Structure formats: C-alpha cells, structure tokens
Image (cartoon, rainbow, N blue to C red; front, side, top):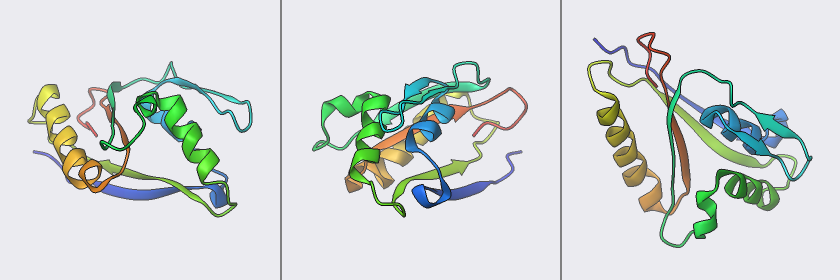
Length: 133
C-alpha cells in the first residue's frame, strides 16, 4: 500500500540556493551555471528514472534545454530575495507501473502548472526501495 507524502519547498536566492544546482540534482545531469561558471554534476546520482520539461505554448522552444531554461530563470530573477522555483515532491503509488507513474505525473503537471502558463521541469526518482517519487 502506498504511503502518502507531499512536500512543497521554494528554491530561493536568500537561502543561497541555485536553480541550476537544483535542476541538475533532480534530473541527474551535468549543468553549467552561467552566472557563477560553476559546473553542477549529478550524473552519478542513483535512482533518476525519468525527466521531462513541459512548456506552455508561449514559452520559447529553447527552454526544452534544461540548462537554457534554468539559466534564463536566474538571469530574470536576479534580486537577492528572488524565488527561483518551486519543488514539489510527492510519493507515487508502488502499485502502479513506471509508465503509469510517468503518465500520472505528466498529466498532473500539465493540468495544474503548464496549462496555467508555467514551465515545469520534473523527474521521477526510484531506487527500487519502495519509495518512488
């Protein structure tokens, strides 16, 4: 039986956070922070099973590239107290298949964020420990 878990956090400059670092970690990728020149490399992170960027119609197609998207956010949101992103972590039912997890999250993100005009970058994590999220 699935155990419910939901966590919502803000990625913000005032906490010393970076949208690039957050996106690299969640997607298990290597991204370059153009603001600092730092490389955020999480290619060895275990458990990242799937990642997707969903964009509203008006968003530049270039934002399908995670590095371009999050560097653009950091340029636009330059104030020291800027809120760069929202992180929403939710447990997924272990009874569903991987394809069902992906479809469930894709549809939820589309209806609740992208259809409201927001860009969304999400990843499915599962280390085969009974905690897909």
